[in-house]
Image (cartoon, rainbow, N blue to C red; front, side, top):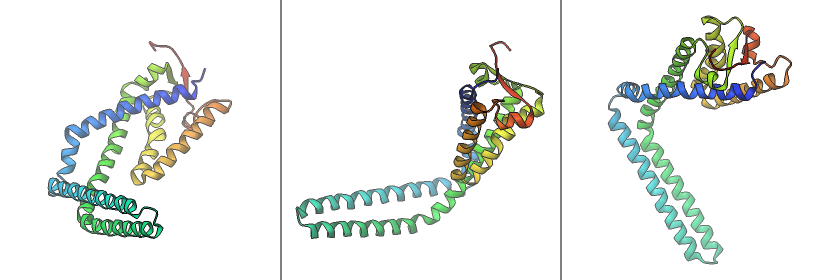
Length: 222
């Protein structure tokens, strides 16, 4: 019997957590230092960036305190309240404008670093997931815990395409380019799988149909 959507979703979630945990550990152990070394004077830039952000937050807090005091002093005088609101908005705009100008040089350098981090996690995830699924012969921990397995023409190539390329590759690529588009594609894929698995006769995801494979219920020890 084909596995239901919930079992498959939980299985995938478990495997996702495992893969991302491994990538995160590699990033903390060596990746972060390697990527930071690609940015000249990273520590100086990052420290200055944090200090500018902290100064901006402190300035915002100060003008808000002044605004609250002005509102309290205004009492029931609507004109004074309106003036306090106007002064507050103007002060906000000045602080934001100055902050944007001050932080721009640091922002440019750090944006490159954070984009590289996204690429590191994206490529790392695909590599780890590929190794993980192929090394287990598609019998991942998530599938074992949910007591489901992949059947059909199961071989290294079909496993790789079913569990990595079709399932994650395009999602990861799109997410790397645009996180918002990536999230939209993830939701769309989730909805399509939900409909195909729950409301069609075959009860199979699109990747199952394309590769003529099935994810079925089973027991431990397979």
